[in-house]
Amino acid sequence: MKNNIGSTKDEMFQTWVKELGYNKAVLLSCCYPVKMVIGLSEEDAEAEVDALT
Image (cartoon, rainbow, N blue to C red; front, top):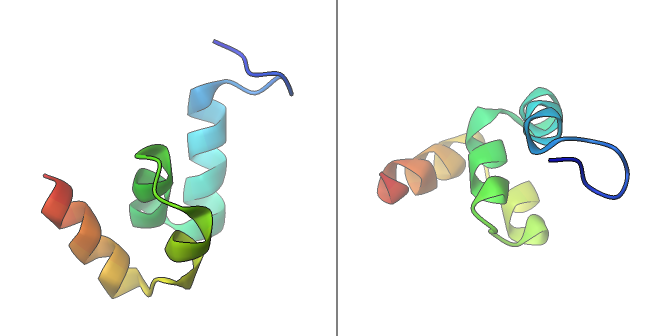
């Protein structure tokens, strides 16, 4: 499924992984607020992802 700017969900997720790291990409894909995710340390993001599973 393409969005209105021509990227698939997978392409968007892969871009987030490249730019922000895997854990923050997972949080964004779960509809966490962007400002909150950007402000998290890698350790905090990993803990949030662990809490989701």
